[in-house]
Length: 68
Image (cartoon, rainbow, N blue to C red; front, side, top):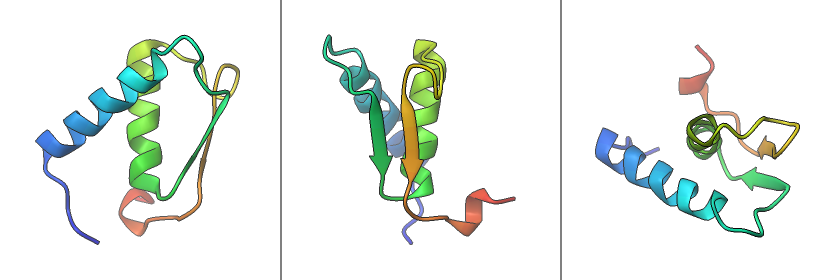
């Protein structure tokens, strides 16, 4: 798996924040891997969205780098 730079991660989180600020925000997000779900969780933390009360997040792949 390709390593992402901090700038790339920050840009991804900014895009997720923009998506989650829409008036018709989803009630659940299914992520293709743990890195994506981590970014979604970080965006939720910034927006003070409560997981799982306000948004359900699921990751379909369990990346070993995030298990430590």
